Length: 99
Image (tube, rainbow, N blue to C red):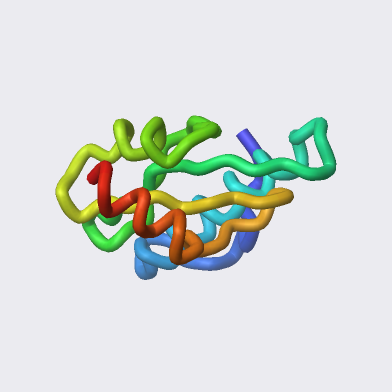
């Protein structure tokens, strides 16, 4: 297990911040482990108890990512070259059709 990002920070008093930092750190590690410099994938994202959660898969399509969403309020996030981004208008239209 890795060392805490902020070892002196009281995470129990800030659970939402802990979740945000944990997700950001996880995405950063996934991005740094990528072999290709130019890459694109999607993942399912949703909130639970105030935390942003997401599947750990790197889906090639929006349809595949949509199948990982466990609740009605979930969404799909694009990751391009290791950076999360919103869906484009075309991608959002596809998501709306399949969700």
